[in-house]
Length: 72
Image: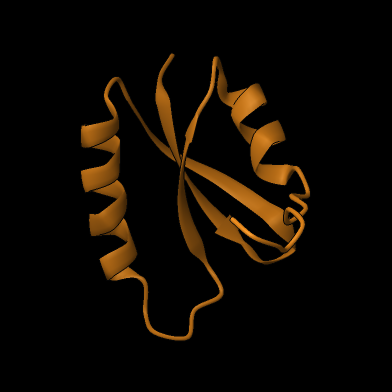
């Protein structure tokens, strides 16, 4: 499965930027893209591991609930 790099804009607008075969390549490129974002920008760069772009976008749009607080 490939690693997708997405730019996430306000109101969950997703722009697929790149696709990489390894996490190392995707991570390095994502860090480079994050460095180019001006301070205070609402845009985010995310790396997601998925079967295809549709699944990647579904995963990025999921609302994640924090686990219960307690002794870890």
